Length: 517
Image 1 (cartoon, helix red, strand yellow):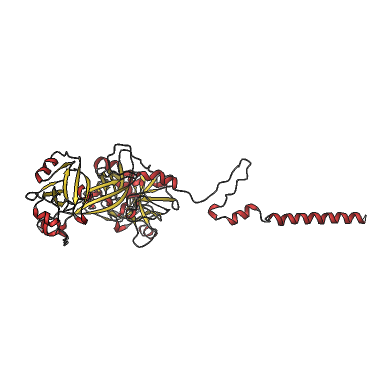
Image 2 (cartoon, helix red, strand yellow; image 1 turned 60 degrees about the vertical axis):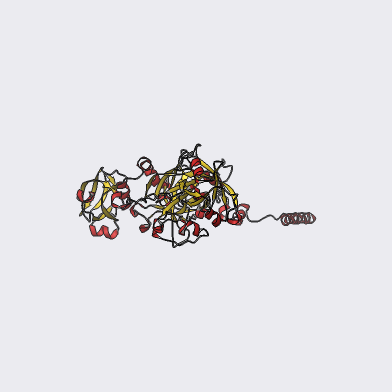
């Protein structure tokens, strides 16, 4: 019996030794595998627990989303916008002394009087995005405001598209422009900015500092932000705030959700903080697009009153039951609110039977109504309800939204012996010009004496002192021959020039210029 017990003991010891050796050799973890994996992985990559059901076959993995597919899809519809404004040089004279000043005159104006100079061009860049296949583009008003010429560039397209302004709304800083193309253009669908939540991922695409199609990501930091004095109509402000990087040149580009839909138009950045950018909600744009297309501007209803929200102190001071409504602080004489009988101290709690909970809500309702329409205002006056009827007027008339008339400069006549076409002024190549330009006798043509900075010729590299030797492959050796060939060019057609530039040792090149006359 004793031997039998010893045998059993030895067997158990041997089995335990074998089991312990297997544990050491295989590195088996005593911590449960699921818990160990969760501890070692970053929080963003940890596996979600499976529901305790027999039908569960896989678990979802939470992590940072990839935006590459979204960006690849929307990039073709994001455009670069170059706005050109002509500035009166007489308001800011600059002295320039070029190498050909003796021949061409001071300031590069071919001997023109200093007080009668051609406007100087200033280019600025921005972004936009295509919203329809036929070429409608949404951007910011400040991107195109005051522009004399607007050019649009598409991704992977060498063409320079000329854009026309369809409509603009300074109050919301939105503008609608259009380009014409022979093909259907890619477009980005518009989402619903009202359903946007703080903390959601967003993607900004644009052309900051001319770095085209730059992509940045972040989250929605806040909604309904007001920019105060930075806005032309602060009461309409309801900006989306985001920490997706927005810089100069991003203006007008899309702010996208993770479904690839536009939920905002990037518009502004904070000058005092980093990671604080603002976008106009896309629902604001959707509400005015039809007016911009139809009339070129937006008309909004207007009461002519100043409002504020009702807080707890005001509620108690006016003997109100709650803080709902908009308190009237001031009423402008002669405007709809005054004619309707509104007084300071009235609390507007409804419009046409619809409850109003805040000042912003009231402004949005009234602004959405057409000028000339009538609205019934539900008012609390000294705690007693009243109903007033107001006939709305146009908000834009009282907020300085309309630009004043612009003076047009008188068109200058060409100089004696010169010819201005396509923004180019040329003259005969006489001996004085040859000496100044150090030209070989074998070079024949007409000399460029001036180039308009507002012309396509300027953009294509035409400068004073160059020699035009042929027009549409026909040699020209005099002003008369140049005029003869230019007379054959139809409006909108392209002209092929061969020019010789005496600077830098002399070089030849072909230049194509569009006749926009």
